Amino acid sequence: MTDHDDSPAERGGPHDARDIAADGAGPACGACGRQGALGAFCGACGAHVGSGKKRPPVPALVSAAIWAAATGGLFAIFLLVPPAQSAGSEPGAADVPPQPETAATGGSALPSEASTPAGQVQPVGGAAGDSADLDTPELGGDEPATSPAPGAEVSGAEAPCAPRSYSASRFLTLSSRESYPISSAFDGDNESAWAVRDAVPGEEWIEMTLSPGTRVSNLWLTTGYEKIHRRSGDLFPLNAHLRRFTVVTDAGRRTIDVVEDQRAADVRLDEVTGQIRIVMEDVWPGERWQDLSISEIRLTCAR
Image (cartoon, rainbow, N blue to C red; front, side, top):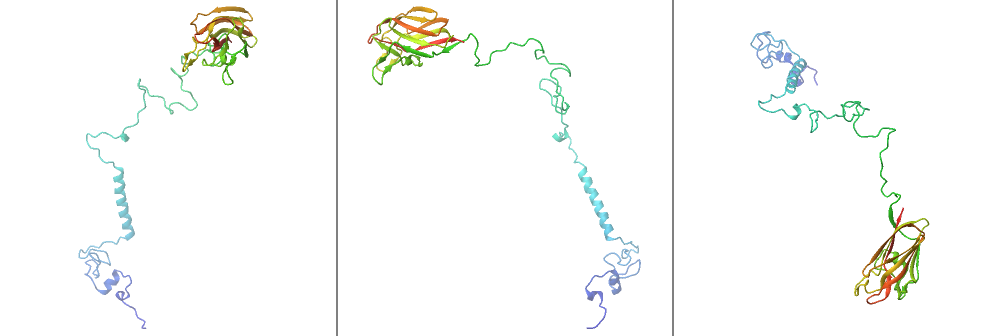
């Protein structure tokens, strides 16, 4: 291996204008007389080849900075300048400033949250400090009349009431599965009944015991059997039914007459009593049977 200097072309590494000029390649520069021009400019002095004018060299980094600044400024100006609006076109929703909301019946703007300071109440009616005409009673004045709450008991009102206990002179029993006890006259069902066979006038009765101090307004009862039988039909005319009865209370007694086709009797009492007895004084005979029946008895009491 010999030790010698290779030419730039043989080294294959980087080279500049001085290396090319030393090799004598390229046209001669009109300004400095050197050969080895890079393209249209002299590699030694930077002048245009053949012009004779010398061009000062400009560093590459400075040239890049100037180019970036120029192009960036133009791009920024392009973004900032809006496109021209064509003649006759209407502005879009974004170009119209928001208008305050107004009431349907007036032209004044409705108060918004921003118009009322926090912690203050918007006055009702006129200007701040004026009170609205709400007919509110003043403190210390007469209180308005009030109605009782729904379901509350009102003194003097009438309502259905039931006796504490009841009993009868007797009742009809036909079999272990068919009977007509006194409880059937207080079950709210017209298809059931209290009954006796071959009623004895003046000896058949029904008695009710009430709470002490009860004011009874009315006594209502059917005068016969109100059942509609699927085969026999209406059982009222077929059985015996009341013709006359007496109501006995702590305050006295009263006798009521019943016409033959009268199916119910309503007796006004309006008295305080602890006991009520109904005595069967007489009956209308039945067309088919002589069993006396009472389907239902009801009381109305004052509270």
